[in-house]
Length: 147
Image (cartoon, rainbow, N blue to C red; front, side, top):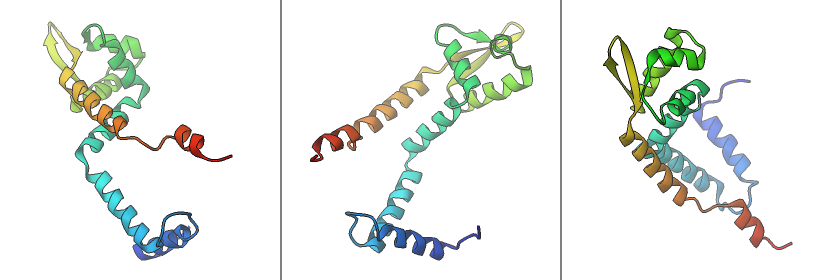
């Protein structure tokens, strides 16, 4: 499939939008969509949610976080929990630390890790705010549609 330039893409989308119901003038609606896209991409709280979800979307990283719910753990414990090599585990630990979801510290010969409460508090606050802004529920739409 050949690559389209911006103008060709815009024209293709506008031609598709012409067939959508309830959008008004397709060119104006396209501009509204571009503004919405830019706003979403630049909103820092949504970028933070996206980054957290990207990190949590990995099974091993989620298992690491889950194992830290009740106690700190040594880096060597994660090798056993995940059944992975130290370099593979270290990569996941580094990603979690970079997002400030966990913090490591030296304890004896090894690094131990715990969850960072302030990051989880921020995550839950932003997620709750985002959820409370949702108002386009299928069940409500379906219930109000005449049959």
